[in-house]
Amino acid sequence: MHLAHLVLIALFFAAGTACGITSNVIFYQIFDDVNSKRPPDRQFSFMSMNLRFFEITAEHARLFPDSRKRSFMHVWAVSAFALFLALFVAGFALH
Image (cartoon, rainbow, N blue to C red; front, side, top):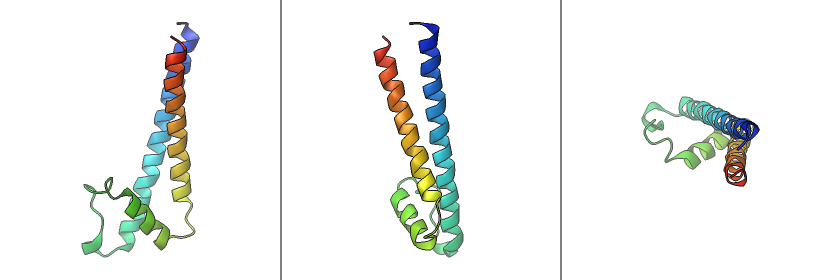
């Protein structure tokens, strides 16, 4: 395996990780937006936020219909998936 192949794999990994982290940061912003509009007794907990992902995003769509955060989050998540898929393919194709 040539050095260029290793660099390509490292770039796919770094870019995919960055996209995934960006998507997660946007989800935390959505989570905070939703909890800021709910009464304290009905707020989502940090412990269950991953299990209630779809409920939180649906609530965000209801409370903030013009927000583009959900779209940005999905674009970054799909980009991360595509880059990790490219990493997987590149890893097998280069052997």
